[in-house]
Image (cartoon, rainbow, N blue to C red; front, side, top):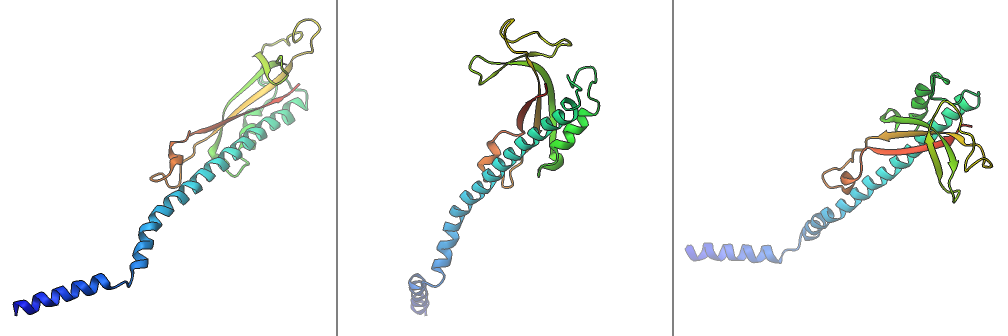
Length: 182
């Protein structure tokens, strides 16, 4: 009897090892885990980049509202002495018109007198004073421009934080847009 039970177990084990039913499904399950993690990372990184681009649009929208509401009506400098009432609320509303919605906040607004830099690629700015500085680069230079700088931010949280490398990226995302008012 003992020999018969041993023979039965041995036969069952041999049959099990030779059987290929379900092997492909088991292999797919093992490999699928390795394929899903990179796909989830691509989704999260793509969402992060898209949100960063939308935030850039939000900053541009806020700066354009400042120009449309204040510069076009001659209310510059806009942020000094309440020359342009309601500017903060209008910029916040404009910044929230992107797909990010109310998650966008206007974190700072500054206004400065700026002159073109030596290479015309950069601006050389000084803080906003109540009187307009005379000229850029001496008595013969052009008049400085009144520029507004709007910084917006958005807190990004990855959809798959446990496996995503997007969870180590900078959050909140911030962008600054600037526009000449006069």
